[in-house]
Length: 243
Image (cartoon, rainbow, N blue to C red):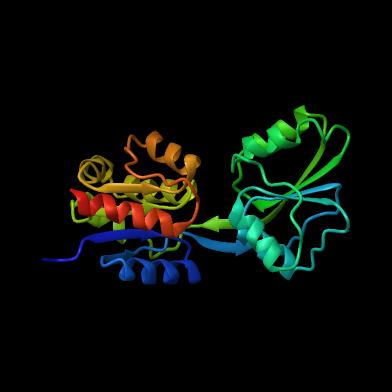
């Protein structure tokens, strides 16, 4: 019996390699389709009373460019971001109970009036953080540590999905969902893609990724409780094997 084919869409760095190994260990045939290239801007966060990081990538780039907390309150959206900070030896003062930008706004809303807040993240973040904190009275500055671009080689999974050749597909960020469907639209394959995905188990990390898929009229079958890739892969493959 052939192994299930599961497409994994991750940045074209060590994360795609780790994902392939993880899927192989779970007994499926991984279809690697790197869908993001991370392009550092060379900027680093400004000094502020509160400094917010939204991704482990942002933490790594900030530290590489010489960032240190300077006594400010360090905030992380999610456990992976917090772990990245701790791995560099920095304490994390605030992690929202709900691992979203809205959750962090709620956590900080009664603390940041007339305080300086630095948001260090990609150039593609939503306005939820900036608007929410400004409405709470904070003086907000945002530093774009990196941009996300689509690799010229991306798109193998789009073709396979449109042909109904995938048993599962793993979406790991809203931007990846956007690029995935952008490729389909460029190829005029959107209708075929939606038909193909109707018979594919779709896994997504986090509510923002799930929402991005739903905007494209795609049903998400698996959304784990955490934002870790391992749980996403395990639960998606369990779902595939149960059919």
